[in-house]
Length: 273
Image (cartoon, rainbow, N blue to C red; front, side, top):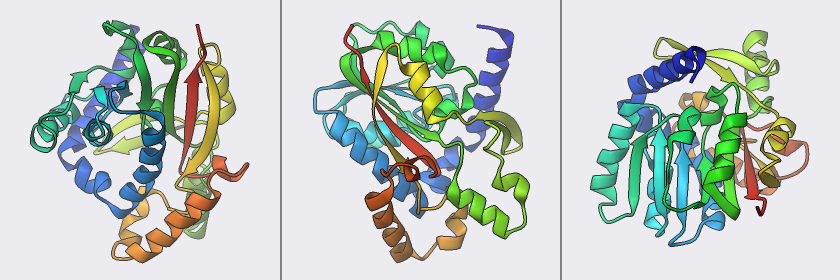
């Protein structure tokens, strides 16, 4: 692994280590976090069945792995942040002690170190973990080796253009933040740690994964439901979130609209070998 990649991985790990104990309070348990996650869970529930073996990249505190494990899915969940893995393991012991669930410290850039006994029935990455990686090509290649033919790959990444974000920051006369995603790269700060964030387009992701995976569906996550940093503005207004969530369910899969949400959710299928 190159020195640049190691430094990037270390910075990302450090950033998320610092918020691991507060992450569920800040996002997982928030109104917006739950609303956006339900969209991803619906997709995961359709893609994976009981007794499937599934691999999760950048698992965070294990919320999605626990969801699948409770449905009878076996999950190997990995993250570069030791603190996030520690929280996930504690949650697994207390919330799903009988689940077939394993957590491992492993960065997205180090997938070639995995030596599973069998190929996985599918894999997924939720809420922008892949946006912390500049070159996704090696990850795509490694996932092609890890996932069996016709298996699903579900990716939820931050979109290149977010309608809500642009509207919100333009209303607050902050053009820099309104269009910060457009160039495809920006610097984010998490608890004082600066990390690079990249915003791949749907077209580029289709191309990167094309040798191994076929794109089956695309929809927005957070088209009308706003980004999570607006939680304080909507706290106490669950009925408003419910209405926005309903609008998302009706319209977030339409062409054009599906690419301008806070995130985009892509369902790939492994091409038969």
